[in-house]
Amino acid sequence: MRAFLFLAMFLGLWSSTAVAQELGVIARVDPARSTVTDRWFGKTEVTLGLSQGVPFRVFLLDDPARLVVDFKEADWSTLRPEMILPEAGRVAAVRFGPFRPGWSRLVADLAEPMVPVEIGMPVDVASGRATLEITLKTVNAEVFAAQAGAPVDPAWPQALTLPRAPQTTEPDRFIVTLDAGHGGIDPGAERGEIRKKDLMLAFARSLREVLLRSGVDVVMTRDEDIFVPLETRVAIAHQAQADIFISLHADNLRQGGAKGATVYVLSKEASDAATAHLAARHNRSDIIAGADLTGSDDQVAGILLDLARQETEPRSLSLANTLIDGMQQAGGPMNRRPLRKAGFSVLKSADIPSVLVEVGFLSSDRDLKNLRDPVWRSTMVAGIVKAILAWRDSDAARAPLVRQ
Image (cartoon, rainbow, N blue to C red; front, top):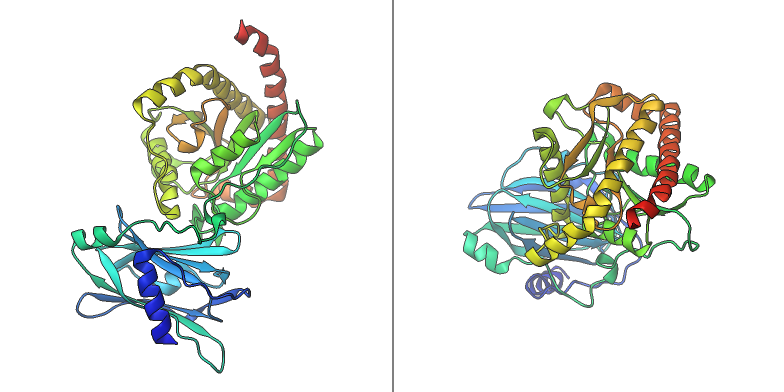
């Protein structure tokens, strides 16, 4: 069986065809049987212990060099990156988690170009437990580049690429798209056992409930722990014909003594070095999805988008200022410079007023305490909702003047 699986996955690596065992039960990842180990002669072994065999595929990505393994129904909840990789070696870092409904992904950042020379998933007949075994060998950059590339396979589940269908709304209703930052394989900022993706999903759900009770329709870019590419988040807002887009975050940022709620609007140039660093980190998160799809617009499209944004950007700025007022009235605390600008890709919609809200920073003890306090969260949610309603009414009143 091992030889069969190795042959199938070896061919699948280069032809982008996944092994397709029809197994529906979730395989639990066993930390005690999972390691990344550097060996002699430029070889590195990646081993994952699983409670059972599951369909999987392996491929390489370049710029930067990465090994990617997709799994059908794998549960990573008991595994932490430091368990499998206590210290960096030829594999610089690993991350893993849900990627799409029913699918998960492991990404290993490679410190040097390596390609798989052995791949297998032997299954113990007695216990049913499986072990994914990948042996990597160092090669030169040219060999790696020739074998790297995101797979194109019509048979691979389309749930990996298709945008989520938007929730239906009534005509002429005010629609808010809430974007809970990160998710799935991309945890965002972490501090101990606290993960940004979990905090922001909970905050977005609370905000949605209060908005719905206020007569506002809400579309979520994600309502579960899954990875959603940056361009898909914006596409969801467009499909829903949203009136505004709000992306919610709580980053861990040491630069500039980051603390306090901050609202960001789109700009080609960042308002400060810390904001530039934050935007760059956000915009590169799509590297997890297999490619960085947040690139610049081409010249002609860029001109057209700039024209469209001439109306949208002042409305985004007005929304940001109104949110800052509402959050301040709710008690904040706010950042000493609560309004900032940067080139966040998630804010690049040309026709939907869009803002990114750092509700707080995990790097701040005070902010972290607030983010974990249900009373503080409830008060802040109320302040944000009040601000959204105020902006909706003032924007509607300005609309006839804008059209003139």
